[in-house]
Image 1 (tube, rainbow, N blue to C red):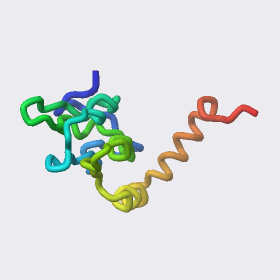
Image 2 (cartoon, rainbow, N blue to C red):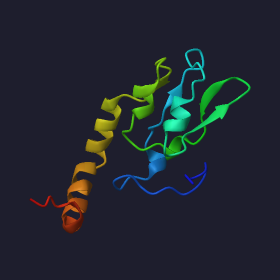
Image 3 (cartoon, rainbow, N blue to C red):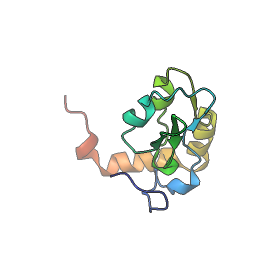
Length: 115
């Protein structure tokens, strides 16, 4: 089961998840209650408000940083995310590139392409 709100989450590339403002926002005026986002998100970010017939972002910190699948599959364009430039600036500012390179090198057996 995905982490509940308030649970300790693993860091993303060395950055505590709570310090990264990355999660979807649902525009209730555009949402038609199809549930594609609720059913399609494997991280448990969404729940469904059956009274209002709309998707609700219930666990925003469960969202995988950089993922925009729900935004891309919403037929009403009711889902939005922070700009990719926000994410790119965070990557540069917080040393994510160096962290990723270090992780790749220390896990060579796991990630090496075998020809």
